[in-house]
Length: 326
Image (tube, rainbow, N blue to C red):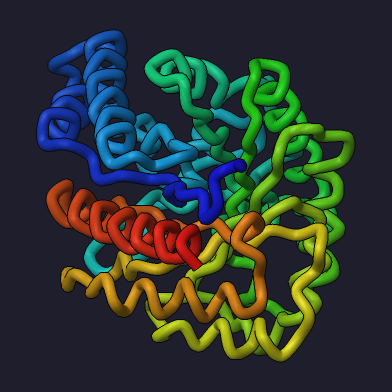
């Protein structure tokens, strides 16, 4: 029997102190690009090892090479420049990209980091991409005549990057679209763009969406052309499940359910996580229900991240045992 309630993580992990120091020193010109890359590889090893130790089923590489999920791509792709730092969350800032020309890219930007992580484990490691709608929404557009033309050009680039990951051997490819609910009137455009990204892919496709206005975009959100929707639920006390239960969950679609709040320092209880899982099981079968945190863990400390993932696994393992004995 295949594993039920497969576990995973959304993407980012907190950067260890040694890597933070290395990034600062690199910006000051005190160490080389090769030395920074070595620090990133060491941090990735720690991320993979933690997930292995906890027994997580589908791993992530932690995004140790990325400062921001949009700026990371824009820094390399053609047609972008950087703005002054813009506040993103709390006291965190990033240099919001500015689109100043036709966007383009050489495929394979994420392949090396994925390969390095996959070489560290026999478990599958997800390829991690940011979706075209979010890249557009989190950038200033100073070139394209409208958002649609920019989004569809970005979709073509992200599609090529997804193909490169698939050709490298990635069985799971996640395309993050946290901005997808910011303009409900553009949901059809976001769905159109995702269809470009996933066209012809045979890898298992996932889209992570968090802290959105789900009531406005649901159930149309279910038409997003991916195999799995990864949605946050713990932050709002699993109210999302009331919305999901009001409609029939598609037989061909999987749900990854966020069961721990990554924007809270507090540690959830095993009982609360189990309650959320059991509520989801009323609508989504156990073989199509995945369990993970609400979002990436980069806003937490390493200790908080480990604590939340450990608690998540404890709850999942208890539910697995209870289902097996029923």
